[in-house]
Image (cartoon, rainbow, N blue to C red; front, top):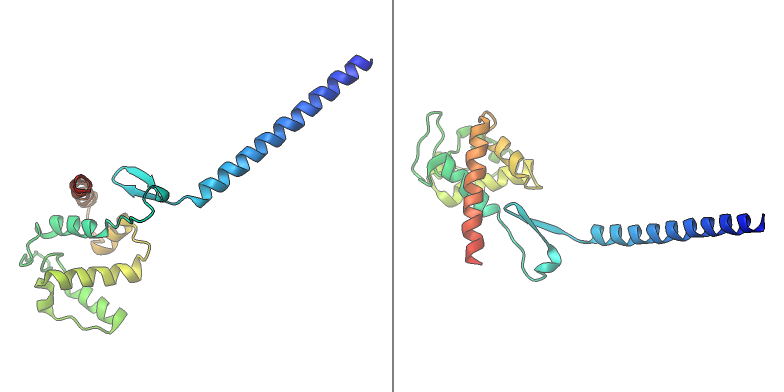
Length: 167
């Protein structure tokens, strides 16, 4: 009887110690995971600590990818639906920017690459502050088919690869 009691006590102590060690390890692991910040570049991710003094901002490359699909980077491009310029800006977008900011852009400003980027960023800042890429495309071209999204994302991946080769 005493042997059975010692055996059961041993098993219970073993379970308790194992549970304590497992819980402690899980807690430490999850705390470490919560503290780390990840950056995605292409299909790979990097922990922020890997680049403590280096922040990757690929938003301009994303804008370039949209501009490539919209106008092939031609600031004088004119679309079929009164969309003009590098990012194919419509009069409705100009009105929305004025409503949001009070800044008036002229129709001719749509031909200016820098102003087109300003207008794009204003729209995104107000409607997509997290800079979600797919939501950005939906905001910019709401009726675009999925093929438009694929083209932009493929160009974006291409630009990212070229950018990564430089650094």
